[in-house]
Amino acid sequence: MTERPVDLPANQPRQFYRGGAAIAALRGEPDAAPGRFGPEDWVASTTTLFGRDPDGLTRLPDGRWLRDAVRADPVAWLGPAHVAEFGADPALLVKLLDAGQRLPVHCHPSNAFAARHLDCRHGKTEAWIVVGTTGPSPTVYIGFREDVPASVVSEWVSTQDSTAMLSALNPVAVRPGDTVFVPAGVPHAIGEGVFIVELQQPTDFSVTLEWRGFLDDPDAWHLGLGQETALGCVERSAQRVEDLVLRTGTADSANLLGAQADPFFRADRLHVSGRVVLEESFAVLVVLEGEGSLGSLPVRRGSTVVVPHAAGPCELTGTLTTIRCRPPLPS
Figure (cartoon, one colour):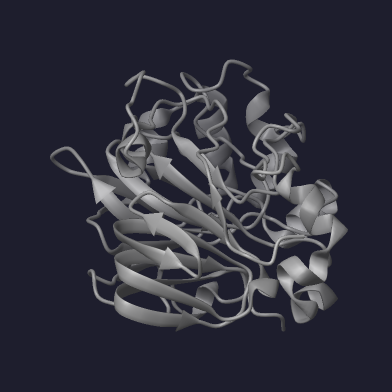
C-alpha cells in the first residue's frame, strides 16, 4: 500500500472516435499521430471499457492494477466512511477527453436501469469541466429542447436520422471554465475542438443513439439489451440549459459542479501561489498550469495524480492551477 500521492502516466485506450492532440499538448508530449483514436485518458481508473477487460484500467508504477491495490486495502485508499457505503469501489472515474471530431448523440443508464438490466449498482451520470477549446464555434449538445415521444426517438434510431437527433438537442457554446452536468438518461454530444476534464460514475455504459458512421457493429449501440429495452433509459423530457451549465470562469471554486452533482462526485479548481493544505481524501488531481509539489511529489502542467486517503492532509505548494476530483460524500 502506498501512503503517498502517485504520479500517473497517460492511459489512452483506443476509442471509435478521433482525438488526443490536446492531451498530448497538456502533458508536453509529441502528438505522434494527429488523427489517432486516443481521445480519452482514463486517470486513476478502476473501470474497464465495456466488454474489453482489462482495457481502461490504470497500472501503478509498481506494476499492480490500481483496481487490485484498492481491493487489497480499501480503507487506506478510500477511507473508512467511503468503504462503509461503497466498499472497495472509488465510485468515480476521471478522464481527460479531447474531441477531435463530434461525438455521436448518446446517453447513459441511471442507477436503477443499470441495476435492473446490467447487474451494476452504478449508472453513468457525468459532468464536464471545459479546460480548452479550438475552432471557431466549440459547442456541446445537452438534452432535448422539447419533450419527444418514445415513438419518435425509436424512429430516429431505426432510420439513423442524425440530423433530427442533433437538431433536437440544446446547442451550448462553451469556453474554458464552463461546466456541464449530464444526468443519466439525458441525450448529449460533445462537439469537435472541446477539451474537458470529465467526472463520471465508474462504468462504460453508453446507449449510442447515433451509431451509423461511428460504430462498426450496428448492434453495439444498445449494450446487448435490444432496441426497446435500451431506449427505456432515454430521458425524453425537455431540459433547461440553465439547470445544467455553470459559467465558472477561471476563479477558484470550492464546488465547480453545484450541489446536484454531490451524490455522484465533487470537483474544485485551485489556483495555488504559495501553499494550500488539502484535507485527507481519495482524490485525483489534474494540473492545468504551472508547477510545484504535492507533499514530496513534484508536479507540473500535465501531471495527473492519484491521492490515497491514507496520505492524510497534503501540502500543495508552488504556483499552479489544478482540478481536484473526488468521489461523492458518503451519505
